[in-house]
Amino acid sequence: MKILAMIFLIAVSIVSCKEAQNENDNAFGKAEKEELLTPEQENGQKGYGEPINLDNVLTKSEVAQRYAALKEGDTTVLKFKAPINAVCAEKGCWMRLDITDEQQVFVKFKDYGFFVPTDTNGGQAIVQGKAYLEEVSVKELRHMAKDGGESEEEIATITEPQRELRFMADGVLLTSE
Image 1: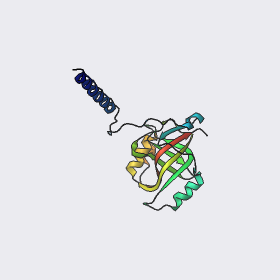
Image 2: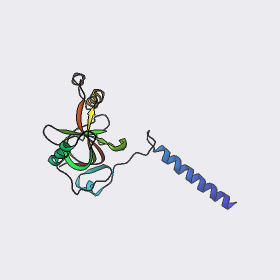
Image 3: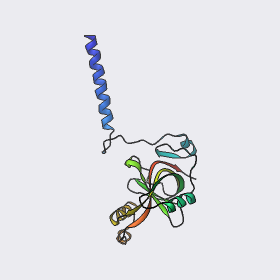
Image 4: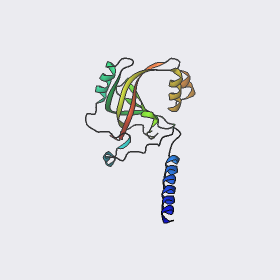
């Protein structure tokens, strides 16, 4: 009888743990990633997504050169640091990083698996992932403009697709410097 009671308690424990895990699943059916707790946070830096090793981080000018060498359909793995120009005001699901006075990189986050704070404008970011070029439709450009807080008049001026420098980040480290 004690053995049956013990088996019953173990079964109940397993089922309750599984239910607790299911409650933490997001709408996409997988658990959301929590903010990383990395040693860099001690220096005022905050990590999201995959941890980033700070070795061999490219500068803005090195990244601009790498993008200049890309052709449509090419990808290259990069890790670079650049100033944050804009962040999605709705959810923090994308960023724009300045790499030259005229060029920005549009950064999305791998598998929609993490976001950055919506008040991140003005800082610096170290990102690692894949760089590529993409023709962006008018519909998507207007959607991003709306998420970025642009006025209806400014959104209405978007009438043609644009070729953009894109980046799919698997990790982001926000810095204040």
